Image (tube, rainbow, N blue to C red; front, side, top):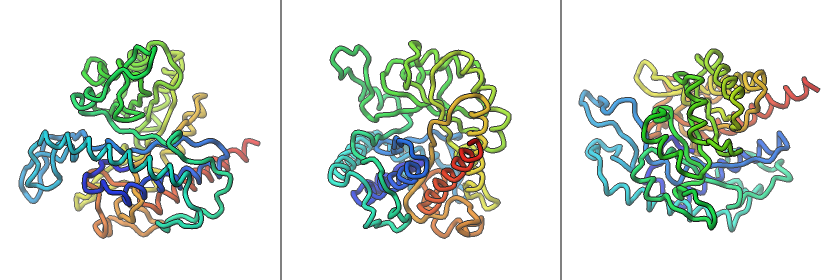
Length: 359
C-alpha cells in the first residue's frame, strides 16, 4: 500500500482501487506459484510517519517535517501538529475498513471481465481462491503510542491478552525497535501478530533479544521479521542475523521489504527508488534465506494503483528527468500499477526458473 495514506484519498473509488491492486498482485502470485496467498493491505491506519529529521527545508525556508496526516499537513501552512487530526485519522481508518468490508462482501474476487483500472490482464487467472474479509487484512506501523493504546482492549473470552483493534497486523519500525524504549514495551503486551523492520544497523543478538521480549512463549505466527537492508547492504548484513535467529530456536516468519533500503535523492533532490534495485534485492534476499535454510514468507511493498512516476524504471521510461511528470507521493516513492504487475510477474518467473532448475 501507500507509504503514507492521505485523508484526501479516503473515498470509495480510491479505496476500492487500492484493494483491487493488491488482489491483482495476489492473483498473479497464486496463479504462478500455485500457493495460497495471504493479502495484507498497508491501509486503514498508515497515517503517521517517522522522519529522520524534525525539520526540512522547502524553498529556502525551514519548516517542521511532514509526519503524516494524523499529525500535521503536507501544506506548509499546516505543519504545526494538530491533535484534532487524531480524530480524523480514526474516522478515515473506520471509513476505509467499512468500505473494504462492503466491497469484499459484494465482490468476493476481482472481476476478470471488468478490469476497470486497465493495468492488468486478469483473464487467464483461474482457480484463484475467493478474496473476502476472512483472508484480507490491514496493517500499519503503530507509531503513535497514545493513539494505539486507545484501541487496545481485552476482546476474547478466556484470553488474558489485550489486542490492538486498530489493525490486524502492526509493525515496529527500524527507528523504534530499541529494546529499552516505549514501542517495544507496548508491543510485548499485545496479542496481535507483530512485524519488526530489520535494517542494516541491526545487531544479530539484539534481534534475538527483541524476539525473546516480544514472543517469550515462542508462539508460531506471532513474529514477522521484515528485512529492509537495501541492495548495497543485504549481502553483508542479512545472513548473520538470519543465522543468529535460527540458532536461537525462535520461530519467526521472514519477509522482505526491498524498497526502503533503496531510497535515494536525485541531483535535483527528488526522492526516488530504482525499480531494478527493488527486483534485484528480493532475489538476493531469497538466495540468502535459501542458503540459511529458511523460507521467504512474504513481500512488503509501497505501491499505488495510480500511474505515478516515482520510481525510476527503464522498462516504463521513467527517468530522473521525468519523475516530476506525475510525482504524487506525500512521502516515499511507490511502484505504480504497471510496475506492481511487472514486479509480481518477474518474481513469479524467477521462482519458477529456480524450481525448474532444481527439479
